[in-house]
Image (cartoon, rainbow, N blue to C red; front, side, top):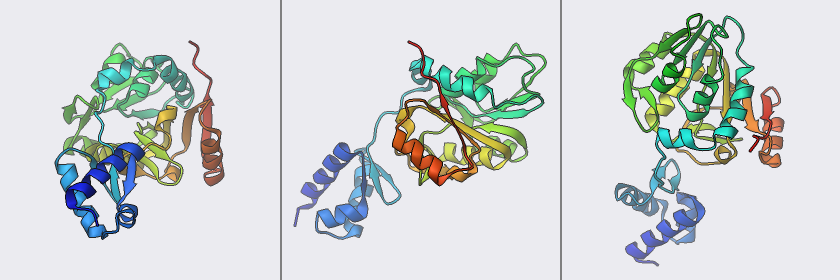
Length: 258
């Protein structure tokens, strides 16, 4: 049987190598109890060496700032945004979540394309600041620079009073079986309220978000009406999505020109 320090070092190495580990599998692998592994995970999380999630742990990585994300892959995000733009109908009240792809969408919109656009992103509201025929509503709350979003109790209360025709929600990770997830618990609560309060729900994801791990689930895939992926998304993932969710409007954005 491994000593505690040896066992914890083995856990750290497994997380770094595999990205995500399950407590039950670690217990079998290391011939110890799940309670022991869960205690190890709590201590390693507190030390900042991994991130403990339900059932196990994931690799702890530095989350890129919102400004950094905006600068990454602008052509790919613009390709997704062009497809999202076609989902907006005249007269719609559109709820647009914070996010770099959604900011790319805002930069494509025309004044009057929607009756109103509601957002929790100050940057997105500023991008639409010259609109006159479309009403722009910025939700209240506490600004979080990392996500580029306002969050908190006030944001949630305002969302609970809103009934949007279309919600375009940001997604940190998507799994065909587990659904949509965020990397922060408070963000996940806001995203869940957006999905719940909207008549139609849409999301667009870059390939690296597919099958990625994020600890806080906020919606099932069955709750989405529209999903936009890149046209070179993994074919097996596309097939699984279409088979499991035949009612989902899954569209592929043309490859970005470089």
